[in-house]
Length: 372
Image (cartoon, rainbow, N blue to C red; front, side):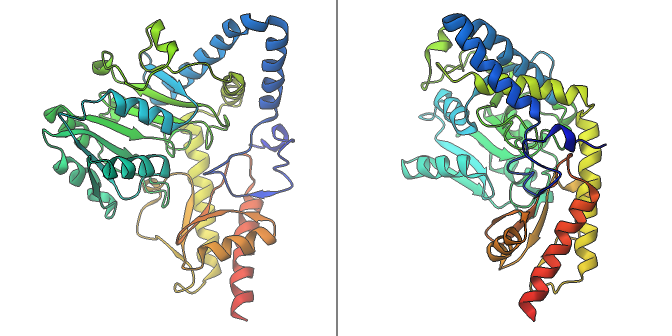
């Protein structure tokens, strides 16, 4: 599948953009959608909101399809942090002042939960490793004073898929706690069916900035049926319309962009199973190309114990020099990113196999140049 011709504005055919786990390129139709939002505002003025609502509904429908949750309630927001705060404000934190999470959550959750701990809530952080037993260990921490568990389904630093989250959902149900699953690094790269995963009672948060190519401002919170009566303290005037987790006036341009990109994915056959097939191939190609470099493990290495299906959409390499390796790669035209000791290579469907092997070969050149 050659998709590069649909991404001419991002020049994906001419650049080695291995940042697909943090910022994927947008197809050209996304630019057309931005212009459409402008034109609707100019032509319809205040009546543009009727047209914008259609785009927001398209985004909600897209989320339902990604979650295999046809009747699910979906709240929208500009960021996952905004939606997390709305949810937390709906919980009775006086009666249940305990939150359970992991030590590997993305910063939008990590920072907020750390601040709540400073303010007096009990925040229990469970070690991510070993991932194979993470769900079991999270479940064991849930008790009658727990308001919620906050956990990612794919860890943002290592790309490890967290198995058996249904066990956490069951523990939360037993004790009357809520479960919030951050699926940002899963949707668009690892299929998720809430029924099959045992997560029909869970809240699911995610966004379109990464694998879905929707850009900023397209975050969402799936609301479980049992929680329809919860009323957030942090609320907006849109919530008066019956959507209790809605916000307030926003820039609808993001939803125009999302609507057009979701349609583009459908036209190109980029369904969750197809995206997973592409991801497994591309990540496997990167991993194999890295192994062929035969670089010293004390300089840079990777997890070779976890099977392919245990990872999400990017390849993490471990190195104490991750940041400087990232910088050196950028100087040679290879865009990656790093988090601490994690150097992340993020492929995307519009990249070719040759681009991926060239990017990894460049890493070999960088390491060998340093070793003389």
